[in-house]
Image (cartoon, rainbow, N blue to C red; front, side, top):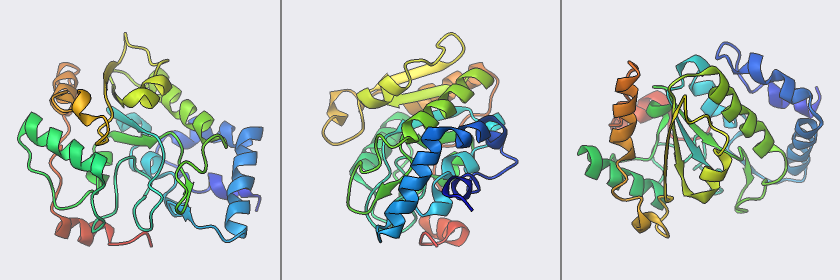
Length: 246
């Protein structure tokens, strides 16, 4: 099996994405990306997230159920953290600083107390597409897979949602996300922009942005189901998703 075929096989059928994106796996950039990832693994490098989680955002959120898109940049590069959803970590892993700030804003905005974990999988299963721009990274090397082709692929994901869905809320935190989302049709979709929740920028306007409540307000005007932003307790997530990237 060619590396690109092995990579394509991780995108599950029946979610609506395979039909829209299968042509991307025949493009030269995607073949080169798959060969790069295979070469990285052959040299002994550990890639995050685990291969079967690299398309977790797409596999967890079918195209026809997308109501919200949150754009991130790169996966976490520490062991056990990344599992294919931007900002999210596996249950039992220490909540990263940006996500801590997201939970602080959620509490200020909607009165929801921060959970005892940082796993956002329940959001993804409600139609929140938690999409990183780059879908893999090498252990301990932040941004190591930038410029290898993932950005082109995820641009196509965004364009697919932009073209085929109606009334989606795009949440763009930070200059990187705003640049990546600049082609979104703002006549058809709601675009919420603000500073990144990183501790370096959260106090420049992320805190107080009220994007969680504004998202639900918009969805209500579209007659769509609002997001339950409150996350289940860690114990329940352990039972459902497990503790590690096995």
